[in-house]
Length: 513
Image (cartoon, rainbow, N blue to C red; front, side):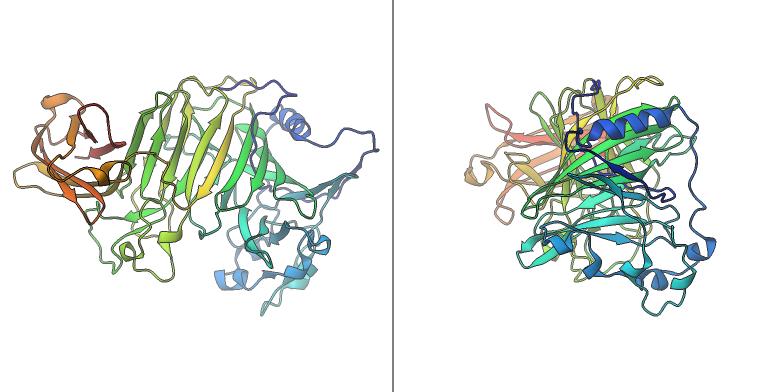
């Protein structure tokens, strides 16, 4: 856990704010200190000493009762975008509350002259066929915002990041479409008491210079158990990055904190035992969890859609990185013209500073469709912070398509399974490619190294083969696992090696009862 000494920056994050919009104006003299994360942290710390006030209910109930078509017919007017009149690289558009969005966010703009509140105005929206514009309260507030930048074409501002709902935000690189989301914090995920979802209730948008290539956003986090200050430095590009810094304060003790949480969807893939009809071969926004340990090991865990909630814990002290990855970039794997799953971004967390002892947890929930996010991954400290003890984390979140350097060697590009040929057996067929694998001659195959957690008292490896796979540009490892205790989870690990070195990342997979 990284301790925070206020006055030193730690990380940058983005906020989504929900609260009644009260217009305030703070003007600084030219000699005054510029607004920064210290100001947001002071507000968060002061809030942590007071009881939480749930802001839900500030949006009129009739607005919550509108249907999806009515809400979607409310469109922000592009000519009303923030900083459009400055011909800035960065422009901001806002979302209207209603339907799913029952809380509003307070938006501020930071300029060299000071901090100014940005009030809600219905004139910024086109209400389409809706007839209720005159009924909307004047001081309602926005539901969230999105930032546009000429990431693909210098003449057009595309969306690059969205803050909307609780502490959720999502971004994309130059060639991607929206998919995976991130959150500010996760609290008590999978706990019997239920998960808590703090929210970004206030934002400060720092006005960039017209030709700037990065933009800073500050956010105030609020929830029943926690408050926090975040800063996000957004740098759009081929790989869009958000440098995140957080300073956090507990209102009360929590069971488990999830740091840098990522949320995605996995409906089915080549490794899924399907129990439903779908013309698409695979449907997912991410197909695996990738981990990079401080000692240098890379580990890949393919995702799945389990029959019941499943939690996997990977000890990862002071991690070099972790993320939910969309590794399969082949349209033929998805066959979906609308979803474009092959273009969904991967999200990779690179910690900054010493995070200490802890673990990455992967939560896989069952889902019967592709409309629900059912995958969560986050890092949790081994020792949870104490009540009223400030703490914080810094990391860079990278949104990208594919990166041969993650990992730099061979990788598992496909995982398939079936029932095998014997009683209580499971057969796995794993294709590895990348790194030095393509150059190995067919008569000198690498060695498959397979391990079973618990040893041969739980399961044993049978019928192992390694064959050249010219279609994948690498090698295929196939083996069967005989389950000696079928009611227990069997944890498998495998990689390819030569006489001296490991040639691939470590593939990891649970065989559930």
